Amino acid sequence: MNHATYSETETARDDPATAPFGTVFAKRMSITYFKNEKWTEVEMVASDQLTLHPGAHVLHYASTCFEGLKAYRHADGAIHTFRIGANVTRMQQSARLLYLPEPGEERLKMMILDTLKANEEEVPEAPAAMYIRPTLIGTQVCIGSAAAPSFEACLYVLLSPVGDYFTGGARPLRIVLEQEHMRTAPHAGIVKTGGNYASALPHIMRAKTEYQADQVLFCPEGIAQETGAANFLLINDNKILTKDLDETFLHGVTRDSILRLGAHMGYEIEERPITIEEVLDWCRTGEAALSGTAAVLAGVGELVHNGEIVKVGNGEIGPNTEKLRQALVDIQLGNATDHFGWVEKV
Ligand code: PLP
Ligand code: COI
Picture (tube, rainbow, N blue to C red):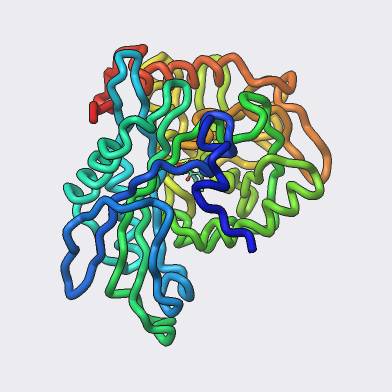
């Protein structure tokens, strides 16, 4: 039986910065339950157990949504969250779209802050960070509720000290252009729900097996949309170009941050549908990158198009990608002025 406990993962706990992303957990998490139309008092509990009835709605009908944001330890030792409000708002939206009980803004924000405080000593030194994973699941016990939502729920905030998301540190990524399959049903792309990741998995696994790719860029109807776990941006010396927002894909907080920061740094920002042909044409001289909380801003070195490997620029991480990534990280770590009000002391 593969049943990891704290003691089995003890070695990884020693160095969260180099352990695989999301495999090390802070010891305590906050938890609350929605029952009889109201939330229970938030409790701080051990983070390695959760009791769930086997008939819980989430286990059968995927009534689940989650968030991903980070907190950073600044040079003075103080801990700061990045754009916590945006993630709270997006989680509320996901809950509504899944007909799950919606956590109030104040409750969710307080749970995140209290969980960080309860695990303060586990927030790693920069450039590692504390990844925060608020999770909402439908706990109604009724396996007949295939066409009905869960009226009961559990909300918890799990913390995981993390380093780089992609293994091998900062290196140019290989991305397959997927033209045949969608990541998820078009109306559900905007929801940060587990089912979307399950839906994308066969396509990502094929890309990994056939092309040793890091990820897939989904291009429904020939338009570059998003990858399996990050948004997609084209970048050059003057401009940042990315798909305009619609409900088919996740509205990344990092995407928004890079666009706003880029505008502030003098880049022209363009949001519109981008065809695959345009992506390929752009990549002859320009740069491509993935944006996400986990990925930060990760440079793309190669695209796989119709089975052929196409270099992006010279195949290395582009200078503008690096400049924008550094500018973002500088704000997150408190090494540059936050003109946007994104960073909040815990
Ligand atoms: N798209 C998908 C499918 C994701 O899983 C993520 C990661 O959270 C993103 C985009 C980027 O979102 P964010 O920048 O808010 O982390
Ligand atoms: C994130 O960037 O927060 C994500 O959700 C990506 C992932 C690990 C699924």
